[in-house]
Length: 235
Ligand SMILES: [Zn+2]
Image (cartoon, rainbow, N blue to C red; front, top):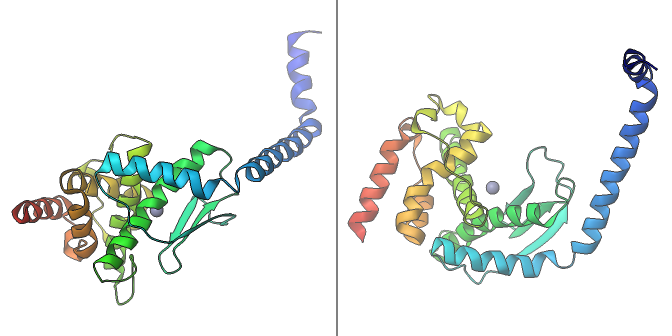
């Protein structure tokens, strides 16, 4: 058989084998996921969290608070989000419909531990759950999300290192654009990194109690400089 005929046959029979391959692929994926969940479900909330929290304490230079919280594996049905922490219920959810292996789970748990830390810190200083969006306008909500996910990324990258590849020139020129996920997560990390690097817990406390205001969103390098100056002066 000539090569040309083989290639033609390949394409001509595509409608036949393509659906079969897709069904087999999906079944295999579902099986792998089921096996992963069955074997990991009971271990995930204990050993992994303790290990990651210990690593973060050493890398970041903070101490996690003795806070009660729960972890569950569940399908979040939220495209693009593989974990979630709810400050009102202290519940951490790891998306079982996306995650299939330990390394991915560790990365997500590490990120969510950042959200747990700030919630506990805010409660400790007497201000209740964090983040809290009540009585906040759209710009203030965007700023709080930016700080929140920036801190989540900082905790995540303390155990799963990644470079800061966001530049000051990448900051949006309009408040609306702060809802873009790259800005919120990668930009958030770029914003909080020098503040937490230098001031650890005090830096995190500054960020959650003095998040950027609407005018700051349009000049975040100035907000960052001001935060560093004020923290330096308090030392
Ligand atoms: Zn997050």
